[in-house]
Image 1 (cartoon, rainbow, N blue to C red):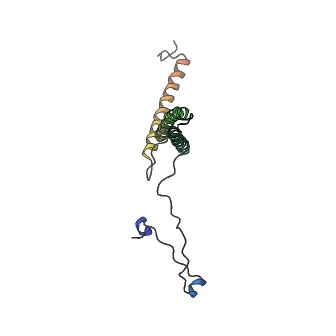
Image 2: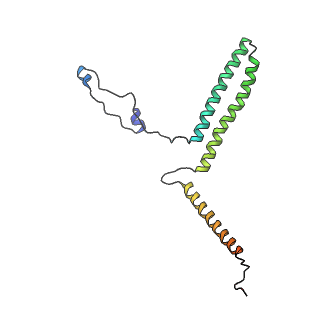
Length: 155
């Protein structure tokens, strides 16, 4: 089973060039552009993920340097171990930041589903009810402002 069959895409047709006349097979591209299977991460989540990857990479490098300094008996071993411990805490914090940012983004923006978003309909309904509540409060305030004490006439 070819890659194109596995992903349900059709392969590009092989173009025949002048080289085919000389006995060489036709031109075949190195790769075929396919649409992304998953949607792109939201910007805040992607920023947090990039930040976390960089911090984790620096932490791993520090851990390796600390290990090598310890094996070599260098004076730098103790400060490197301390900084590695601190970096591990920071890296854990960064990984949690990615998770929290993703959860917050999903909560604020809803889950997109096809053909329409359920979250969007719920938000619309919530907005409508809030609007009605504010309108009712404004009406009550207007009645209070105009001296409405429940009297039907001004006698």
